[in-house]
Structure formats: structure tokens, C-alpha cells
Amino acid sequence: MKFATKLVHYDVSPGDPFHPMATPIYQTATFEQDFGDSFGPYDYSRSGNPTRRVLEDQLARLENGIRAFCFSSGMAAIATVTRLLKPGDEILADWDLYGGATRLFQQLKDHSGVAVRYVDASNPEILASQISPATRLVYVESPTNPLLRVIDLQASARIAHENGLHLCVDNSTMSPYLQNPLELGADIVIHSATKFLGGHSDVTGGAVVVKDEALAAQIYSVQNAEGTALGPFDCFLLLRGLKTLKLRMDAQQSSAGQIAAQLSEHPKVSRVYYPGLPDHPSSATQKLQARGAGSVISFQAGSPQAAKAIAENLRLFAIAVSFGSVNSTIGIPIKMSHASTPVDLQSSRAIPSDLIRMSIGIEDCGELMQDLDDVLKLI
Ligand SMILES: *Cc1c(COP(=O)(O)O)cnc(C)c1O
Image 1: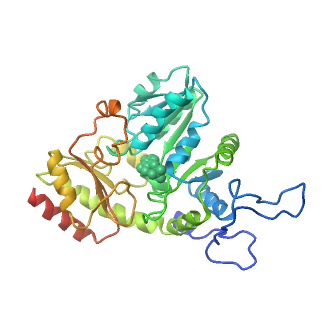
Image 2: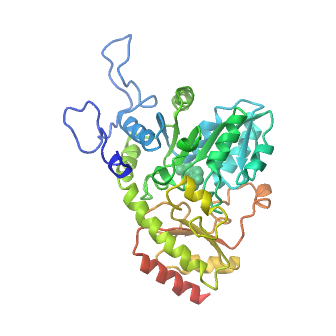
Image 3: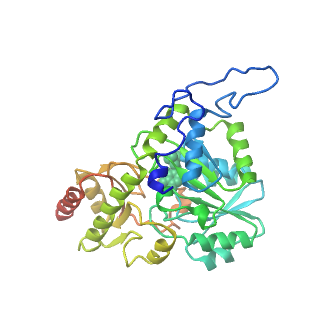
């Protein structure tokens, strides 16, 4: 089945005598048992819920994994993966990460004895040279957020596996429509479902997808033990949003390509970061491992004042953290999404203070471009 068909053709309610077209919301905490000494397929919603299971199975199918797990947020999904490590173990992570991930990793060091070291994973030789005997997990996003650097996922997987490590890829900026890290060799895929999977800024959620039974059992054990699973209504919202993933991303990506080209030719924009532009240093890798460059664009406005003025004067771009919504949004990473990066790490991360990150929505592309043109004239 092709991806567009897969998005809407699946068993939305296994075993249901009424054959609904949409998955029912099983808003129940517990399930009555037939016997005192054995359980049915579901007994308690922390451990398993039919609405959640339909969503998890659909995500596993879209990412070509064997099992997916849905969490109350992307951060809960990331935290769950870190639970696979023991004191003394180390995560080797690319340095350009979501601010919240860096904040979580900082706490790991202090509270769990798991060290996190940062490398430039966009260079496979550097990545390979930085693996230590304590390293257990290689952790990357691609394209990275907010600098849209591209990590060669096949090379990273090869390096990880040569050293007996797992590769975990946060696929939030691409979604399974544009990139499938498990097929490129990754062992674990993470999504902030809050972004493109939901797509409507109306649900916070996260997912972990794996292709190996042993890893699935470990992730399930943590999800069940810690009670971080996504609630039934939020699962329903994600199932609903997911059906239009391809339509949304096709529209958003097409507009993003046009806007990136517009910005890269604009005299007031000093630099555009978008892996779909031919002058992006890794556009060839992006073409090989993904089916497009997505709809997140960053650019430098020349000064922090100009960045602020642009963000505040655009009419059609909401100033908001996050990305992936049907609405276009704009943010200044150093002040917003990445403000949670610990201060001592901020200076070593080359996030320019005049950097603007935009997420292109499904509005009329001509109107978005006009809005940008009008505001760039002002500054
Ligand atoms: C937003 C985001 C997260 C965190 O997800 P939440 O749903 O906000 O908890 C993790 N990784 C990336 C790349 C993100 O953009």
C-alpha cells in the first residue's frame, strides 16, 4: 500500500461489531475481567488502551517498525529512551538538539549517573572518533532544529552498530511521510507528535517506534511502570490529525521551498538554512535519505533587533514555539524554543542571536510571501 492510502486504510477499531469509520475513544481507566485469575486483552489503561493501541499500531506501520508507543509528550518519549541506560553509561549526542532534550540530558548526569557528551554528528568521522567504552546510545535529530543541519543517518547507524551501540533518531522535523530512520538503520525513532503528526496545535504527544522485539519489551516495561502513556482522547486527536499528514506536508513543503528561495535572494537576509536549497552543505545527503526538505526554515535577520521586528510585524505568522502546525509560526530560537538549553551550553552552540525559525503552514503561499516581503521592506 502506498503511504497516502496507508494513512486512511487500516482497522480503526479491531473487533468492533459496529464497524465505525473513526476509532472510538475508550475513555475508561479499567476493564472488567471475566475471571479472577486471568486478564483479557486490556485490564488497565496505563498498561494498554484500545484507542492508544490503534494509534500505536498505525505509527509502527507508517515508520516500518514492529511496535510503537505513545506518550504524553515528545519529552516523555525521550525520557523513556534514556531509561534504557544505566549509571556509568553514556549517550553520545549531536550538539544541535531541541532545547528540552538538552535540559533533560543535563538532569540525567546529575540524577541518574548517565553522562551525555555532545559531538558534531554531521561529520561521520568525528562521530566515530568520539565513541568511548561507556557509550551505549548515539542520539541525533535530522534535519536538526533550529540550524537544519543534516546528519547522515546510514553512516551514523553503521558507526553505532560497528561499536555495538543503538542509534536513536528524533524524526520530528520530517515525520514518517518524508523520512523513515528505521529503514536507514536506526534502532529507535522518536517523534514529538505535537508537531507534524498532530499538525493542528491541539494536542501534546510523543512516540517511540522500534523494529526489534527486545527493545519493544524494554520500552513497554518503562511506559507501563512509569505511567507516561498518552490519554485516549489525545490519541483520538492524533489519529484524526494523522489522516491528513500527506496533504498537509505536501502543501507546507511546497510553500517552504518557494519561501526559502525567496529569502535566499533577499538582500536583507544574510543566510538561509533549508536543506532543500542547492547551496545547503548537505542537500545531497538530504535527497538520499529523505523525500523532501520539510517545511521548517531558519534564517538570519542581520541583528537581534531585526529578528524581533520581523517576528512582531508579520501578519500571517504567529509568534509561537513549536512547528508543524497548519498555521504558519515564527520564533526566535535563542529566546524561545532553545531558551531552556542550559546557559553554559548555549555559548558553545552556534545558534546565532539573529536567527529566526519559521514553520510554514497551509495558508496561501503567495500571501505568506507577500507578508514576508512587506515586513522585510520595513526593517
Ligand atoms: C518539540 C520537540 C520535542 C519535544 O516534544 P514535546 O511534545 O514538546 O514534549 C522533541 N524533539 C523535537 C525535535 C522537538 O521539536
